[in-house]
Length: 130
Image (cartoon, rainbow, N blue to C red; front, top):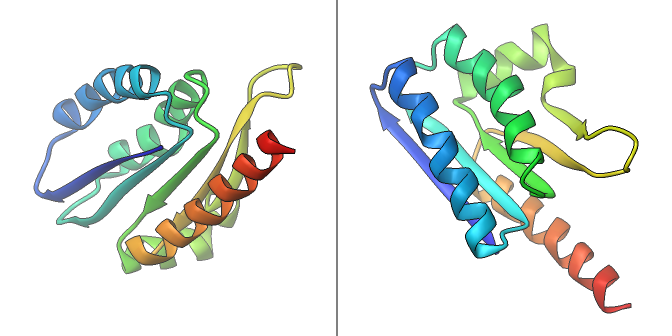
């Protein structure tokens, strides 16, 4: 399954990071293979929150066994990262030499993020059934 978290309005860093342990528990309990984080409706995604989301949170989620994670960003932030740090928009979080890891992709809309996750999870399911 896919777990989705949606952020909107105003939120501070302390509240933003408190969701990660809850999300990790839900991933483990529901055996989720994919996640979608929609930050596109946040009024402000501070530099500190961006750094946490794109680095620390991804490492923590990868350790749960999550295979795919889509992040929806505001069009402005997506454009900024595309210009300044394009390697952050599509990458793989590797977990040592085991071959385990998580594919991460950033998007400008929930629709495109959902389509990517659908393709990825269908491919994964097809491999498991082969």
